[in-house]
Each structure stands twice: as structure tokens, then as C-alpha cells.
Length: 110
Image (cartoon, rainbow, N blue to C red; front, side, top):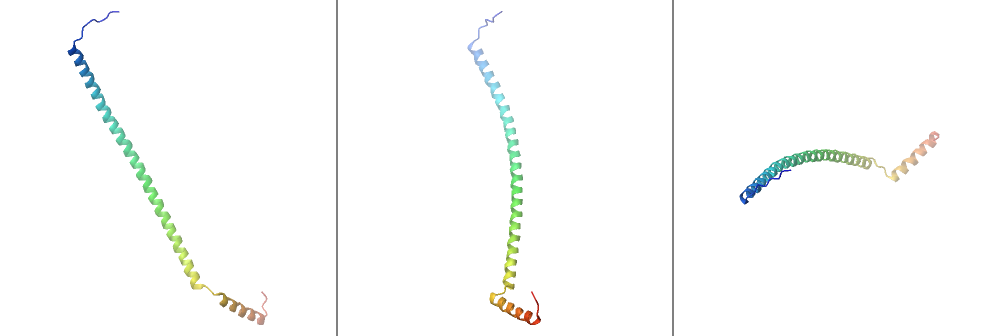
């Protein structure tokens, strides 16, 4: 095995360190650009997914709200119908008495 016994001066060592620093800095610049692109892509993808989910949620909530409105309107109509067509207990009892009397006279069997 042959060993290299060349002497290195301080200037040579400084130049080597400077070249190493340049190579390292250039490598990080490229890495930074690649990471920035990747992160931007991931953020955009996540943003699209969130927007889709939010749109679907808004659509479902709108449908639910419309359904509840229709149910409430239906109940209001039933309550109004009941109030308009309600018969009091005394009126009902009078009517039953009259019908019973008529059925008795006509000899109708229930």
C-alpha cells in the first residue's frame, strides 16, 4: 500500500472547506425547493379535500333544514286544521244524545 505524503497548506485546507461549504449550501437550496413544492402540493390537496367536505356538509345541512321546515309547516297545518274543526265536549255530548234519540225512534241498532 502506497501512502500519499503530500503536505497540505493552510490555503489548500481553507479552499477545501470553502468548496465543501458551497456544495453543502447548493444541496440545501435544491432540497429547500423540492420540499417547498412537495409541501405546497400537499397543502393544495388537503385544501381541496377540505373544501369538498365542507361543500358536502353545507349541502346536507341545507337538506336537513329544508326537511325540518317542511315538518314544521305540516305540523302547523295540522294544528290549524284541528283548531278549525275542533268540537267541544259539550257539543259532542249534545250531538250523541240527539243521535241516540233519533236511532231509538227509528229503531236502528248499533
